[in-house]
Length: 124
Image (cartoon, rainbow, N blue to C red; front, side):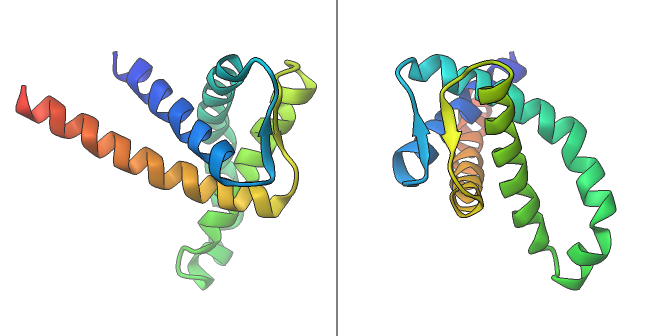
């Protein structure tokens, strides 16, 4: 159940990012694109992101953790490329700047929605 909730939260965060950031576009079948992107982003964050953090550990330390934002932008861009090229899903991130801003939006919205879900679980 928690995995499904996490998947929905990520899909909603991707929707907000596409709505707010001008360089992120979604083609006709939007909800399918958000669902596929949520799964792909989760897989890339689970597999690729730890490797990137390990390889860039000196930069992360040197920048006091701010370089993680660059890694987040790269993972969003990579997920959109895989979604387009391999699965034909219409979620497009046009530039790294759009990916960077989109990853910030996705992170902020995910934290807010996760906190709301946790608060509801505590009340019950």
